[in-house]
Length: 175
Image (cartoon, rainbow, N blue to C red; front, side):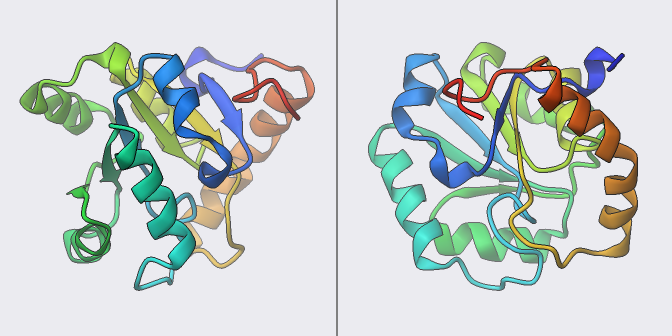
């Protein structure tokens, strides 16, 4: 049995495959994007053209995008600045207290906010603790820091069970 703390709202293979229409149809206005291995590989210093195009597409649809990361302010701020979006760094995910504080400060309604992340052990508990929706994506690169590789060991069986037992829908019902 998977504890509710680790159940995302949706699954997706990638942030890049989800169209703006999905978010709008479900009433989401604020997208909180994990940076490392969700939006970009851990060692990518500058946003690539695919990332820039996807961010533009979502912004043109009227969505508000924020990078929401545990990484350092220097990395997150630089990357967000290059994309023309805001940065939320040092969130201490899986804890949700900083995320809740930011939601309150920014005036975000929980039902209009969704967090996308690749880690079941950090991103999803943080979103659930803040009472916002979440999308668990696959990682986009194999190169990761040791702490992330360690977390992946603990999430492997949980992730497999969520997928094989159909506990959570894919963003459009596709597997």
